[in-house]
Length: 378
Ligand code: GLU
Image (cartoon, rainbow, N blue to C red; front, side):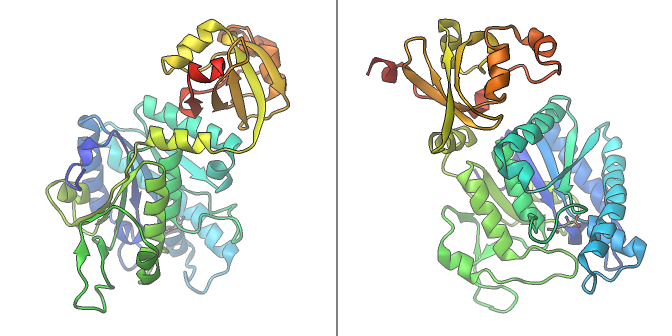
């Protein structure tokens, strides 16, 4: 793909850096936001699903609380984030309301994307919002994220979100218009690279940290984010957002660097699943479930004959046919105790059996790698 074909993406995560959203005095630039909303409304009309990862809470809040950004302690920054986040999402909601679009706030900590059980929760919510045509507006949960345990920058957060929702596109909008062979601010020979297929160690070494006034990410964090995304089968577009209608500019041929993923998100997910070393249990399936899974469907409790092992929600389990042949592997949406209680039952019975609503599937189709019948005969 090329940068001017954003609408080729099925699902995009767009990351907005703080510097784009506000002026030097840290006042929100609502006209800029209105232009972005117009662009995103257009993308959605062409059938692309959009999630937004936005920075800006700390910067906006620190202005309100009169806190100095660089000289403040963590708690002061967290108080700023708590204050600014309200203004930030309100500004997004206001901008999108003009297009009849609803936004929803999601605040994440690294555990929500890195621990498999929590990953399932975060993904479930984001998928539902997209189903309802709501735009998730995501930021780090700065009020609880401590120095030791935080994404640190929203470039990485955006890449993790792209991985969780299996987005095929990640757009990093900031004050840089792409990747250069050297730092363009200091080296007149620096060449802009429109397409990157591999992020090399040399590129990472070279990516300095061009400090900007309010954002935290430099070129290095962008490359690292692009690398996470590429591994997840998601291409990354790095472009400047410092223009009105930034996505429109990109679509009409604006300068950018595209980091091209060489596989699809589905292929990357399967590869990741196949590589999980610790498998905690087994689910034995009836013939109906085997046929459904072969067709790419999710595994429902009704198709499970037997549950073996002691596993938690989020653990990897082996999927076996009635004859104990290994057919695939998946991430369990229920613990072994719960799975035992609901196996063989219809999904609408789950609530009365477990006492809570739960999920309708035992293994979601996106969390499943299917080896097929070949193995069962060996
Ligand atoms: N979460 C921070 C904020 O909203 C921003 C982190 C970043 O800019 O990368 O202010």
